[in-house]
Length: 204
Image (tube, helix red, strand yellow):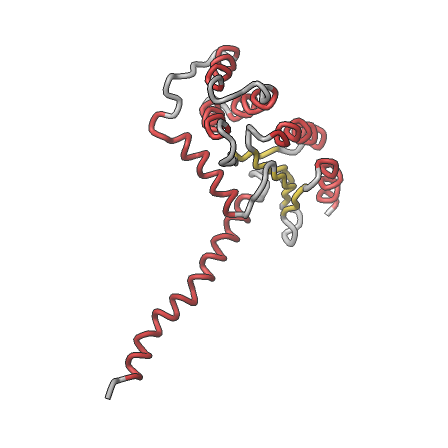
């Protein structure tokens, strides 16, 4: 006769593991949301943006977000989220990361510069736009921008964060706050509601 009791007992660790896996995945995803959608240190409220440098709506949204940042004196945290259907946005994001190595302000200025010239940029002339920007700001743009792949890894990490919080479009704009733990972030789904949303978060 087979020892069915022993067989069932042996399966208990496996069943317990299978039961715990979904919980651990869920907790990890929530940890990701909590770590990304929060203001930077020293701020109670901020604007968090996931953007694609080739995205027309991102181009239109960027100056609105920047103006709101100045109006309310709150920081903007920008994340790269290049979409697979765009043929130069990933390389532009890597180039922006290169300028980030000089300063985050310079990297963001490059992003805005690309948005301003977005209609003229293509895979063949992106490098030329980068060289022009670098020359204007008196910095070097090496022939191999991403030696060792560190900059690509940063872009990939941002994109993975976006995927982890279930992003499916760009731009995705959040107003994040540490003032109300029960409602730490609100997505701005319509640019016309940007200021209204910030006002609502500040009142909480």
